[in-house]
Every structure is written in structure tokens, then in C-alpha cells.
Length: 176
Image: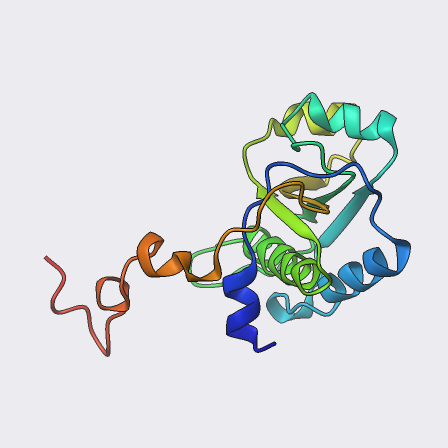
């Protein structure tokens, strides 16, 4: 399968089967996150893998994971992330998102469904999971076997804007 086919195949799963994700698949997903690029190779990511029911319940106090049997909380250490010198932009959120994307696409290739979650209460997560103060929760990736019909890879023809509305060559002269 080509990369573009893989990207089109992935969709947001909001109904998971209770089946556990196999450890080999989990390790492959985590490896995909490990090899993801980060700014200046600082690697600020800190991943919290959650599979045990008692911890899935703790996560559910901060967000809806739609019954996923595996949740990866993607955190990053602010002090470890690269900072753009011109404006002081700390890119921990960018690094964490690249890692999340790599893991999400790897899960798809392995026949798993996923849901990228940004709608969560970080204070609840920090308290429930006893996260170190230096760790900032950035994304949650819910993973498991989909319990619904897969979205059509062709859906992007109608659900995405055409390239001419989002891509500009050399300069955005045509922007009104």
C-alpha cells in the first residue's frame, strides 16, 4: 500500500471492540513514534501507555476514549524541546504531534483503528496519572479494533477543500 493510500484509509474511530491490542503491534506503534523526527532531535516526547482498566477509567475522567482498549497519552517536556531563536516558539506541541501522527498511521497499517484526541482536561490527566510537573499532555491517541464500518478512502473528495484553496505557490498574492 502506498503512503497516500494509507493516509486516505485512516479515519477517526469512535467505536472500538474490547479486544486488546497485541503486544507486538503495540511495540511496532511505539517504534514508529520513536523514529519520528523532532526539532533538533531533542526528543521531548514522553509517552504513557495505558491498557489496564483502572487506568483507562482514570483517563475517562478527562476525556471520552470511546471504549478503546489502548490509549497512548503523548506528553512532552517543555524544557527539553527545541525553541526557535527568532521568536522563542517552543515546538513541543509540533514534536508531539509528529510522533502522534507516525503512531496513528502505523496503527492503520497494522489493521487497527485510532482516534486522535485533543479534547481533554490536562489538569485531570496530570492529577489522575500523577504526571511529573515538567510533562505537558499534548495529545491522546486511542487505538484498537474498530467496531464500525470503515470510512471510505474516497471521502476526501467531498470532505476536504481542493488544493487550490489551501496551496499557494511562491506567494499568497491571490488571498483576499
